[in-house]
Length: 131
Length: 252
Image (cartoon, rainbow over the protein chains, first blue to last red):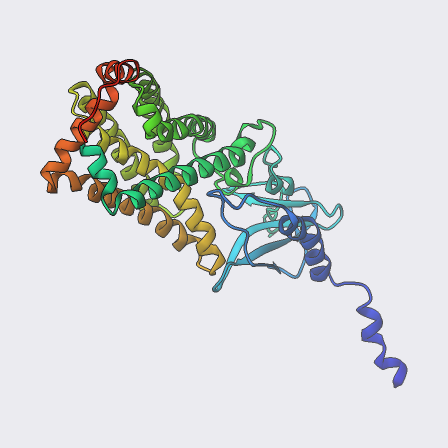
C-alpha cells in the first residue's frame, strides 16, 4: 500500500508534455525577453510587468511533414488584467525548436530577438485529419 | 528703453529662465532620442520597436521612412532649438540660412516620413490622427513662418516658429509621459493616446497664450518690434561700434 502511494510521485519525476513545453518556452522566450534591456525613452511598448506561458493543447499535434508539436501562447500583464495571446507559436517535440506567429506566417523564435529571419512554411499547422 | 522696461517687468526673469530650461531639456531629450534611435540603422537586425509592428504591409517603405524620420529629427530639432536662441537671432544672415535648412529638412523629410509612420502607430486611428494633426501644425506653421519672415513680419514669424518647436517638443514630452504613465501602471494602449494628444494640444495652447500677449498690450508689441529692429539689423551693429569708439556723454 505504502509502495503504491509512491507511484504517482515517481511518474511525476519525468515532466509531462505540457510541463516540458512550458519550460522550453520559458527558457527560450520568456526569460531572455525579461532579461533584455530595452530603451525606456522610446515609443516601444514598455516591457510588461509579467508574462505567463499557456500550453493551449496538452496533446501533441502532427504537422503535414509528420512532426509533432505543441502549440503555446504567452500572455502579458502591464498593470491591470492579463492580455492573452501576446505571442503565439509552437514548440517541436523532437528538436525543441520554437516558432512564433507574426501575421499569418510562422517564424523562428529568433525573430523576437531582432534576427532577420524568413518565415517557415508549413510549421505549427496541423495536418488535415485522415478520413 | 523699451528693453530695459521689459527687463524690470516682474515676469521677465521667470520667463527668461523658463525659456532656457525648456531649451536645455528639449536639447537633452533630442540627444537622448537620437542615441536611442541609432539601433534603427543596424541593417542586420530588427529593433524591438520594429518587431512589435510586424507584420507591416509595406515593410521596406516603413523602415525607410523610419530612418529618414530619425535622421531628419536628429538634425531638425536641435537646429530649431538653436534658432530660438537670442544668440542666433542676433545674427540675421546665419539665422536665415540655418532657418532655410531647417525648413527644408522639416517640410521635405521629417513631416512626410512621419506621416507614413503614423499609419502604423500604436494606439490605432486615434493616435494616427494625433500624429497627422501635429504634422499639419508643423507644416502650416513652417509655411506661415517663412511667409512672415519674407514680409519682415517678425512677430508673426516668431509665433509660427514657436508652434513648430512646440510640436517638435511633443516627441520628448510624449516619451517622458509614456515612461511616467507606465511607472504608475497605466495600460500602454491608454498611455499612447494620452501621451500624444495631451502634449499636442497643450503645446499649441501654450504657444497661442504666449503669442497672444503682445496683441493684448499694444505698447509691448511696439517695444518688441523696436527691440528686434535694434538687435537684428546691421545698423544696430554700427551704432554699437560707434558707441564704443566714440562714446557720448549721457545726461543723468
